Length: 295
Length: 298
Image 1: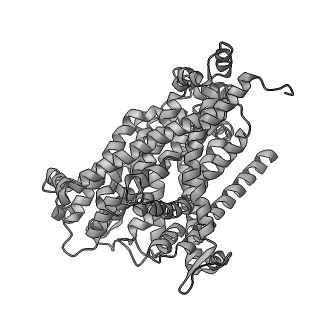
Image 2 (image 1 turned 90 degrees about the vertical axis):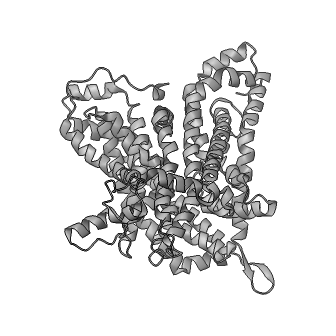
Image 3 (image 1 turned 180 degrees about the vertical axis):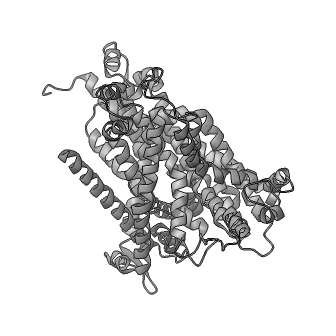
């Protein structure tokens, strides 16, 4: 259990005095991480002319946010809203699916004794290093033969596999589920299925949420896979759609009004995940602590 | 154990296979099959006359002599040698500072550094592309106000550095959280004992905390090796801004993508992707070996 328990922080050593000097230095580093986002937030309130005519890190003469948002959501019959919906559908189904698969597999590899389980684990670990192009391009060819390209399945199915998720869940399960608890339940005659659903699943919940978050972010942010798999804009996720708007905007020829739309669209697309981060922060830590301490 | 398996043990083993089965099925379908298919593809070549022919390792031999591919590998190798150490050292320092308890506004700092991880690489590249740009980038605006020539972030000599900055911005927080989470699990008694012996905070950080972080650091290095060799999103987005600087083979993954979809040469693309995977495995393996040897020597 030791890896999951964070040590008590209430009692501080006298040497652990807080320092404003250190804080100021760190805040300068923090500025590096926040300034681009501040720029994005400010720029999304600007009209195209203010974008070019006013200083980037402060607001322009017109507060144009509502107008930009209206452009974003109404352009091309509201295609942006479809991208947002697609992104949510892809990310949530891939995250839930891969977290479930990782949980059952991780539990089996950590807690159940069966022949070949070390071999299975070694193969899964090796798979972490496979580059995505080595997979995405042949998967595209196979999906094309089955008529699956340009459908949501083409993005969701490959995202269900997370070798890193299995690794995290195995490490997490090894600590979180007490072996003697399982043994005594077995002596009492409980079946393996009941053990998992009534005892293990509840104990594995924080690890489950961690894997879910990882896969949610990974699928939400994925660009390469949907770029290859999809060709109708109605199935695009936000990343592919925005990249296409950007390419059009950069192409010039009277498309300059697109810049403020790309920027406002980018701003809208990062808000959901940032809000999710604010609320789910602690899960990153608990699940990762288990994963990074033991190897 | 030599005695025959009890019924309970057999039930446990059967449950083990059943629980592993759903993942194993998807793993086989989405990972093993495409990989095998890719290996198969890489051994063939489509010819103008006579369709597809078996060519053995000819595609690999071609890649190893292909200057465009090798230059791309060189670029991502440089990212690995320059950007990864900068990013990981910054992440480590921030994690140690957060853990030292000497910081005001700790929660805010932790979240602010982590937030860029929530920004998709595509949007990070778009945003930094505008920031770097001459049209309405704040750096160019500042230079103009000061009456100096704006710095060219997107030129031939500077592009790779600009890409490294985007990757660093995106992933310092992610690596910091991994290291910080690991630090929180080091028993506090270790520090207490060192303090009683008169060790300073820096000494404690260097001689207790950093060694305790070894597994977490190794994990972040391996992920960074994989990530930098696979660099695709950032150069692919910046290509629309600077098409003359970012060539189709700027990174190996961009090259594999363009070979597959622009040049329609799936066979060569598969060989490139395989070689890249091979390089990643060797670099990760060598790294793990050297760290293990150092640990044994220490």
